[in-house]
Image (cartoon, rainbow, N blue to C red; front, side, top):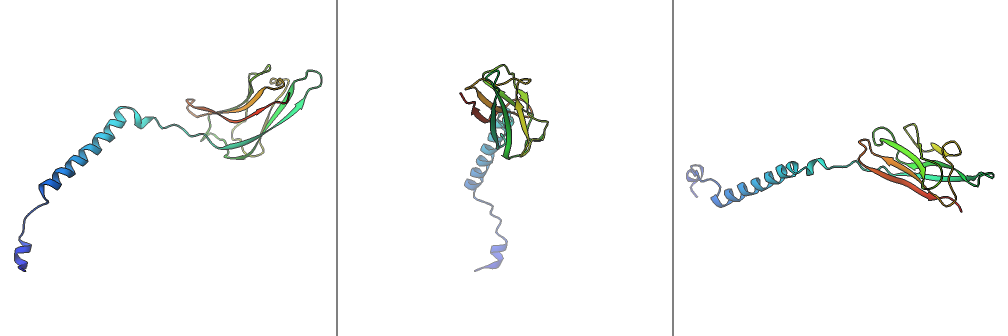
Length: 148
């Protein structure tokens, strides 16, 4: 073996490998630029936190409606970093819902729907509604049905 010839060899990477590398880089670059131009890079949504709630019902003897207490029993603490607003409402009754809070809402925090905030009809669906910080996303964190 001639070491001097090995050190003096000026050959580069094969032209075929060079072309393949250039095409691969171009395709990757086009995909990245295309995703941002088409808006796919900005479509990341805030994820809904995982929180558990328990509902307790107390019947008002005179009206037949229910006072509902929703209690955060575990899971994520809902605060200004992951929540825009939190609302307790029902599908039937004379309530528009009440704000659950103030934030942060952690295990042991509770909110009540009663005569002043809107008692709940028998059989109504009661929900804790989470809204994202930017207001684009909402999700029912907990749902229950009032007794009949």
